[in-house]
Length: 479
Figure 1: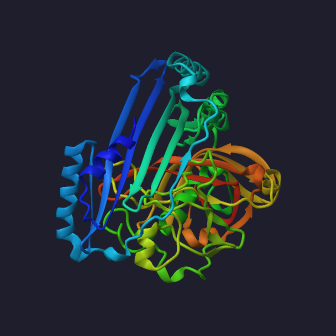
Figure 2: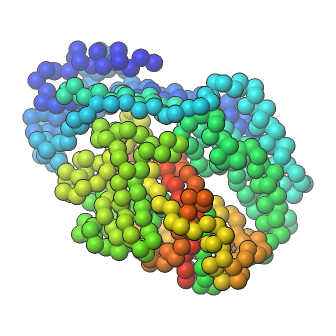
Figure 3: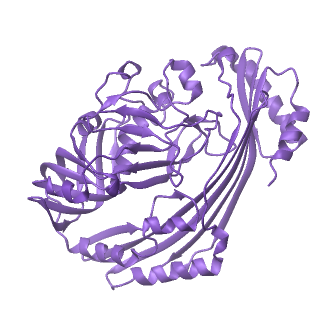
């Protein structure tokens, strides 16, 4: 779709007297294929296209949105925003004269080596059927499914200051699972990137071992129903990157979102144990903990050149040697709080305003390979792939469960255990970070399903991490 035509139409109707305006256009396509228990589910294609406008005028700030990219649609949206300005300008969190204005134009496009359309729908469906065959290796496998989706988003941001930002994103969303049952015991094992995603084309599938790990996934589901329960004790915990993804997301990402710290999310998703006065000195974790916001890893889910307020992205450390440096907040929240932050204002679609969202939030690699991480543990458990999560509304006390565990005894991997769980308090947990894996253990993950805001915004985030060892962690078994 040619979004540039919509810019021309908008400029024809926006009043010249408006102090400042922005127009953010978005065209989004999601295509999904699923085969469950050898049966093809109805393929789906969803498209969404529209415009979000922001007006700053006469001491007020307001926005509106429309899916009608014509004179009538833009006229109605502008009129609606002007009415909101009159209603809300006495209650604005940011003074109109301080509203941030981007000052740099530019563009971004996801690198794609193998486009989605290079493979026919028939070939993709045949691949999913083949994966189903590899998953269905025993009568004890009672449910199995393979899925493959893509998302393409074209975004165009312009302002009355003649700023123009064009960005095109391509995402691949694969995965499969197998469920095994024996008597009263049922276990699920996922693989192939299930629940995660990457930027790029079909070339990204191999990074998730899609489809090659399908049989292994089923074998591990079968092993889990025969495995003993995870032991209960205080011991060492080795988290693989697939679980580090959730640990970063819930106990670093959400508590550092600046709008949450400022109280905006209190009624819906909760607040944060982090306060504004902690930045610059608070010891969030051990000296081994280094966390960056990094939108420059091409295959990671939330890589971009500019956020949805037009702020240029760059790699920035939020936590350095364990010390809390800065929050996750876009330009508007930075103006409110007078705290320096990152390019982190993001919207899920054209009909939502940008808000503070984690983007690519990564733990930086250390200096230990996997063999060294394992050999450093006298008594502990390795855990892989999240299964359950619970965390309080200040993102402090948590309890997480994983699909797959293995006991580590005297520096060696031992038996598989089912239902491995661990609990802790965010700051104490990160201060118990004892070893950080090197580049050889570093993996890029992410989730398309992070929800926040009223009305809700479901958005994609990226989390890359090495494997990490934590000491003196409360570990326990049980579904």
